[in-house]
Length: 245
Image (cartoon, rainbow, N blue to C red; front, side, top):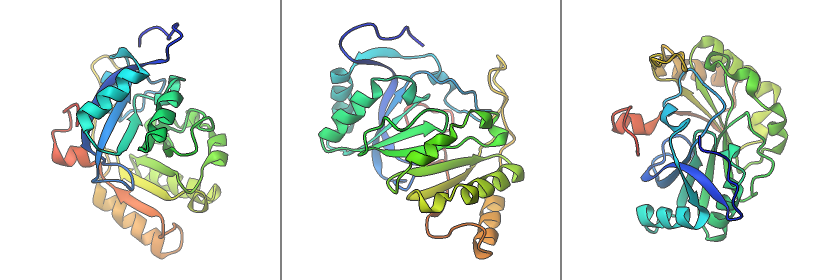
């Protein structure tokens, strides 16, 4: 990642800005402009955007807004993602500017960064890290106190152990009463990276996950009103390794 911003003009290091379909929230299937920020302090075993760890160019907020309008035209749904976007403080300036312009702003963030400074108009999709991600110890549990019904919590599951951890976390923290949606998805198989930075995962069968979810929902062990099984829609449509989708 490039050096911190030392200028008076707010800037962000941007990996890519592109127009695609939203695929991992209650907005799944809607046209959406994605702004991917550079940099992440986590190394989840299943990560599929390792290219965003370091690659990117510094841009002013005004230049970013211009790029968003250019690639997405009149699209009003904007997702800020990464990497981990909350590592760059001026992301809050960008999100506020987008909200001021009447855009619906989604923030895809791990559970490892403080979400409390976010503009209350932003819909936060918080990805709590499970044991098999290799980063569960990095979850900032105080974030749960700041969640609202506008927000969503996501779990990417690699195993039955992860599933049971998710179920216990939902119950212990009363997530069904705090957020608008609890999103669960099966990790796709990922090979280790040649440099050893990412360990890779075998992945989880989606049918197995659906059957576990339905059995526990029927038994009252999981909420049914705001529990949602999801896929990574862009991987269904395009090659999983393709960027900019």
